[in-house]
Image (cartoon, rainbow, N blue to C red; front, top):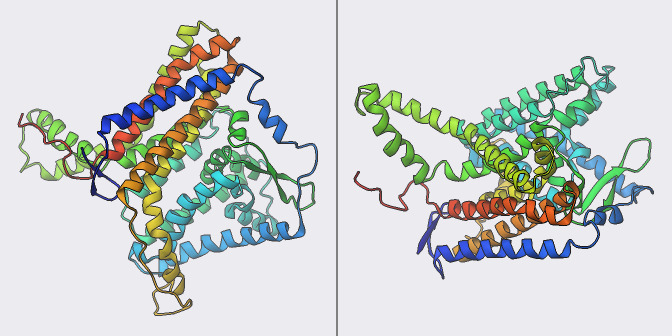
Length: 477
């Protein structure tokens, strides 16, 4: 089989048939499930978290570490300011604009993967939190709750902001000024939310990036806690990888929706420009709609094009709904076969964080190749951030060598497998805490195992889809 990976559009002939990858990955996940179930016969694996994260003593800090955190806080505000300024006054070419590279490549991609490795340092260097402290220094109390934050609202502001961010990424014109205006508007909304509802509340529930990086940081082998100092410096505490996710629980359906959108938005980003998705509209839906509209393609071209954009936008909204229904159906099946008196809402909240490693795996397989190509672009952009002919740094852009397709494909397969195996482990530990016996916990995980295998096969299949060129020649009918 010749695979056309949609990341590079480079033909690559697999060493074995594609279906063998699907069977191999499915078998690996099933064997991992059996191994986890067997090893879980002893103490609750969640005790590993308590054994390795001792909060009874102050975490190790130093004056150097305090300086590092202060420098990172100042640097985060500076990067935010530079992103806005270069978006408004820098080069209009998105590939040459420093702000576009800083935000989309370094912040949303590289920093996200760093967070998975070193923990939620964003909580302590959040530039909007630093701006709120500056506003407080001017005499405006940003910590007072002027209006009670309703429990029903929960994480929905962050979910709405997340959907808007992905919409801008996928469908808005890639203009640096669009990003700059969006960040200015987001800054105003964030500071207003802190002023009205209190800084602590808004940072926990309403600030998109604080929620995003907190979820990612739950997988890291490091967390940061107050060291007891007057300025509230964070101190690093080491723990087992995934230990943070073992203790997390989605206390509101909106956080489940947020996590599922982390998963579904990446999947939709991967599929929305493929031949499969595009042809579904132009070759399947239109022939069915034209008789109803009583028109032809030529006379309805403008309307059909507008309809195509609505089709794309609605797909972004439909993707998390599809994942949410699939997720609830699996959990409902688990309740059905175990006959346990646990509510579906409780079960969905308990298992939500088992999806985070899968979301990270999908994110990495889709974005890391392009990220690696774009990371070096920041050097010449730093040398001349406003396209004025400056040479602030003695550097030249050297295009990175392309990643061999064989290396890329097999790395993607490994990342997907590791993410799903981690999800199997987290789901199994969660099941042992919910169900009354080890046997029920294992039985309850059979539908979740089906879900994990399905996610894996779906992820591999999407990675194999080409962009804009047919993988299968459509039939004449």
